[in-house]
Length: 441
Image (cartoon, rainbow, N blue to C red; front, side, top):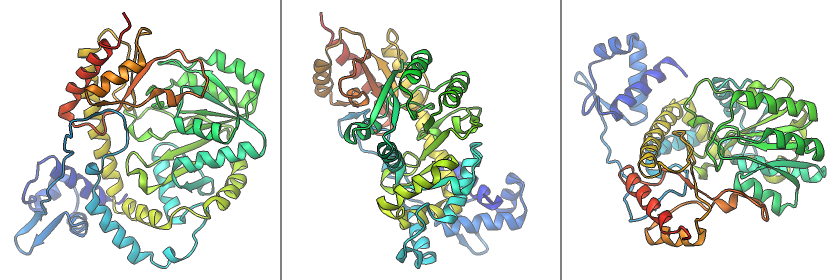
């Protein structure tokens, strides 16, 4: 990102925090504050003018364009069920402007078939974005997909046609379970506890069943919300080398990790054993349908071959808008805002859980997918009735298990994206009341 874009983003942050209200400070003062030249500051201000965030009055100064912000209206439902970004958090005006710019600048590209692997300019931007997270890869290893769901679908087809097998944890992401069950893939399972993975059991299963792929969410696991430690990740990579399989690393919540010291399996892998998947649905929005798959070199050709017959190429309009959104600096600014907002709500949830669930086990991680472990005497059907009476929505944990799996957990998974901040504490109290009313005496 260019220097003037960084300065523009900082000015936007100050506007949103209320440090600047109707009018920006003088150019000279902001040059001192941000320690930049007049040329850089002028570029930054013009960038904000082009984004329709400020306007200039000659010989007077720069003024902020005020907009009415639409806050989620509480409809009486305490919705802890989804992790998708709220539309009210998204900069629709700026995105619309990127749409206009993209159509104007790339109109010829929209009327032709693009590369199956993705728009080359966008792939270059994605390559830089990945490098910021210490994921260094060649551009030809990057495939732009219609969300990570399409990447998983393609990998499932590769497994199916070669009559290979896959190992999944229990519980795990419900969509990988849907793929396995509906495509009748050969699969094996291993147990994952609320706070760790049973590596001993996993190795025994791998030794006896010899899966060709292992699907994992090492960071902010769905549904458990937990993150693997570095030692566990090294052990898993050693298994992949020893027993000759690929790890599918689904890092769809990587942007929400609070620690800069976290290393992905892809970063730690020295043997081209990791397929890295990144999603944009939680930072941007699910309807954009964009994701990234970073492939070992041996899998580029078979992956490309299947993608070509599924959709020829990923939606051109989504790609060129994303390219414009990233080039303008809006993506980095928006991501920081979404992550900060989420962390604030997750902190409020954590405090509420400490108040109402001090005698329960829950993952204390300040992140996505907070899980409360329920006592065995809970009647789950009764609990659903009690939650419905109190207008509380939670996700159904049963979808995270394959059919017939003799699971050992009863739990509730809570997300804060769709519930207003001032309703989190009240909602958690209602959940506690519903649980108490559902215990079998």
